[in-house]
Image 1 (cartoon, rainbow, N blue to C red):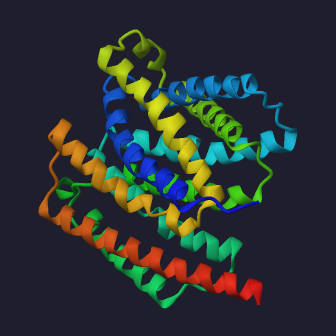
Image 2 (tube, rainbow, N blue to C red):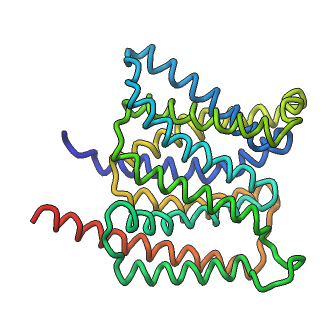
Length: 308
């Protein structure tokens, strides 16, 4: 099987950069009326059902039980826990700030890959990047400050970290699992994530269904954008990348998305960030870039050891 072209890799990467950076704004508009978990459930169940039917119309056979199980597991981690945590946090924090917390994804990928998958020690550059990132997170979260003076609400930030850890685990594990074809895998993952979101929503959002009747034009447009562009286009591009591109390259979206989200939040929601938050953002993104560079070196060494 031939390797994918550089153009296809970077085209999909550009889609993830721009589309996922904009979905933070889309979710914020949607949850002005809908509870966040219900909005996630509607987004992924409708999107996943439509996409799965399209795969059958295109002649795909039904996945095997093993493929169903693998795709559902990854969907539970990614679109389930990962996206639901982000949607919930957006009720309490600016879009750019939530996107910045999601930017810690490469940290979790490095740690999980070392502990459970590759078992190869990170490079000095990676360790330095981790240290820089931790300093940035300390500046951002400001745990020593009085609760009234903290810009970041800590418990939603903790949920984002949990979601990022689950997302990292699913992303690293996905290539090792027996999956359906890419388009069908995306559909099953969305259905699994949407089912999880719906179950949790019925428990913690008792008035969620009543909110559906309150949906306005802005809510419909936001949900349509999240389903068609965010899920079909963006999620499909990401699934393709984690199975065809180096993980270190795929992970770079984590430090581009916050820039896109901050810019859109400023343009459309009049969100502003303090000087301390902007400094913390620069430090965190610098750490993430160092981690990505160090991870590339680790993968290069691993490849050389494998071929020697």
